[in-house]
Image (cartoon, rainbow, N blue to C red; front, side):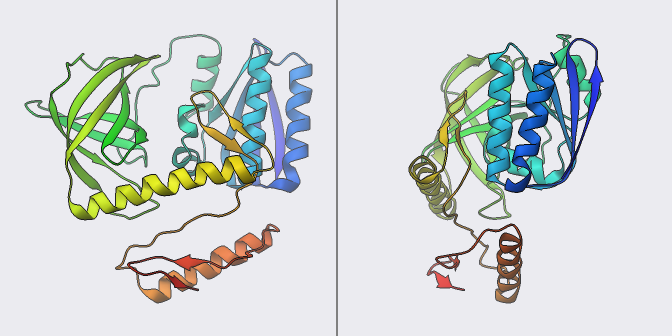
Length: 298
């Protein structure tokens, strides 16, 4: 990985990361961030446009750096993340911890304290939720915050009109690590509350297909297991603002495929994953399982 810094007024620096950010490069990154902080640059923009890959240790270093800057009265903003980085951060819920913008100019505006509209959310984002209240002309686009077997919580722009509980809505969302198809459920609004610059909506799920119910239940169970694994087996674990679990090591992960994905494609993908892990010094100790109705080991 290559690092380069660009200094700006008002104690702001932009740090450009290019290549692959793995455990080997953590010390270089943390040293550079510490150098900027010691030089009086309390507000840092991490431009991740050219970052092709980062692992859990690298994510832990970025989270720790943000804590250090904020402890000194500064902040860290993520700018122009690559598709891989954006999907990784959104799937882990880190987009609810970090301010993420599309361009350096937006990051500079935000860190200078000028008003910046960060409410927009791409409908194709993995964490997007389409909320179509019955009787409304157009749907509202929200961000998935929490998922339970029978409840869904999402945040929406503060400009969303205030609503009372009991209103019905059709909800469409995705869990891309589990399947390609969207989940389409019907829910009843339980409450709407302020959530910083946004509003948070909690829905009781009134209807979903049995197939969706099984998939959601499995997702919830896997997330609970992952949280336990992070806290019990990580080298350094903790909880960031917003209750997001952080860690510098993960001991295992479950990978789901759609039943219509050909077996050969699954095996080719798994082979690539194993090779990529080994290229970064990560060994597979207990094998990898492809789980359908009945699990089959590769």
